[in-house]
Length: 243
Image (tube, rainbow, N blue to C red; front, side, top):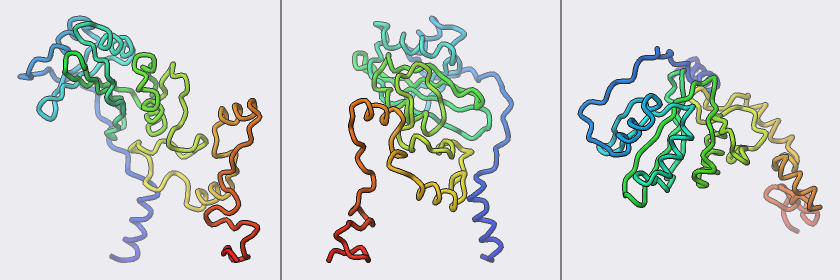
């Protein structure tokens, strides 16, 4: 590989993937030959136009697309209706297929009573990533919604504590699991290093944590205490080794 080709490859890493061509909206295909699922049939009967396409993957995984504006109502009905009783939220995540149009929020549900599962998907346009929280339907969604917010930028309205859970609260480079996120981040390596070296102890805590600590009169634990990894303590020799 020539030096020019190598440099071109590095530049591509910094700029991130090229934008995919946007797909023109089209009517969802009608299911043909899919095995029946009692929940899918009940959803179509009760919510009619709020239920979109129904597909099946992996041989037995039924996926139903629902309208974003009625997603909370539909999901709550799936939990509470005696004939459904999806009382266990197995997973809540999101998918960005990179089509430049939408992002999907995914709910994997299981009924411990009826011993069956169903996957619900809600499509959100990239310029309106907002959806009602299911925190008060399944408390297991608490950290899962925070993770989707952190990694994809979906805002769950009604969540009592929606904040980043994996990245620092003041992370400014965007949402790492989006297809438009550059492999090396949005800032240059020099800027990333500058920001890391300029961080103070307070930068490792959210504003809410700082407020709680102040009200309780608690001193924040030092994130980088003297004597920690790579940080010599007063008793250490100048080169960082113990005498």
